Length: 392
Image 1 (cartoon, rainbow, N blue to C red):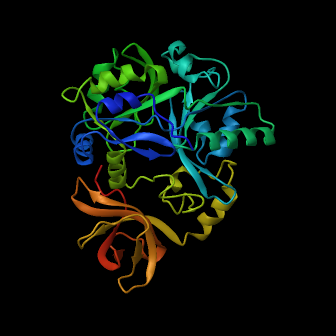
Image 2: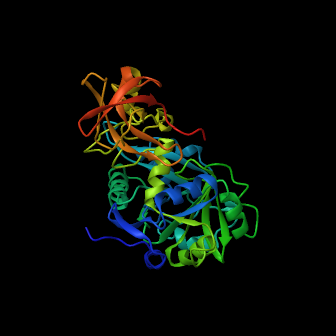
Image 3: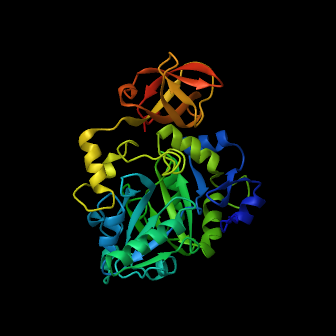
């Protein structure tokens, strides 16, 4: 697959970023250092280019029904400007992806969302017309999910338009204790800093109308700012500035990974994957996004699993011996009996401790349970932690 480039690729190159392939995209992994970027988000503010995330717009008379059939949460609970976290599951309840679903103002046509921002009324409830949604699958999943939505719509005979708008949108994540100040300084009104978690609105930033949501993937306060791809360089300059001595710290995917690992947030394709690591929301400890009173794909299988319980559950582990845990490492009972495996691992920059995430047999998944992680053939003492590792 040909590498896809975010609209800010040349800007990142000029800033000295190093790059990595992620989901078919060439994305900055770090600008200065992972530890420096991680610390900026925990202590002040950092800005990520997350334009590799997918954007799919769904609108029309049956848009709500379509979204409710293909995501595990209940989108009927969303008013314009609201958002929710959800899983996307197959018939067996296995997670294909996780996503955030945004309810756009009514009347926005699928395929026009990024350009329609300029015409949106700031009073999001003032629109009329059919319901409209924007959902964000993970990097490299946009085509797969567009096909899934389109195929299901056609099979069910639903009246909704589905548009893969990934190339039309760009997304920045402004994250950290000082994120609200940074966003407030960039916007002419206080409508953004007044948002509650998982609320969104349209706001003008540097003359660009953007969809601004109080969401993030770091465990800190923050905002995700979505705008037309053609305008994102102006927004990046507002937050980061033109050189290394001004503005917020630019951050790459390396710090994004250490930050989310400290919080125990799932990484699609690593902490769950329909082929390599098939898991359900209950195993992955996100059962709170499963609304069994809706008729989504996989509902019946998940209802059975909720009644019967799971064999393994997603947990964190903290190494007590020297070593760094990594995805794929076996977890044992300390006596060479395998009881699970890690899916992610790192040296926590905040705690300066080796931490990992993975799945353990239910009997070993309680906080404080003593286990071992096999690191290069040696059993290293560890203890189970129920994420997050940080008190946020």
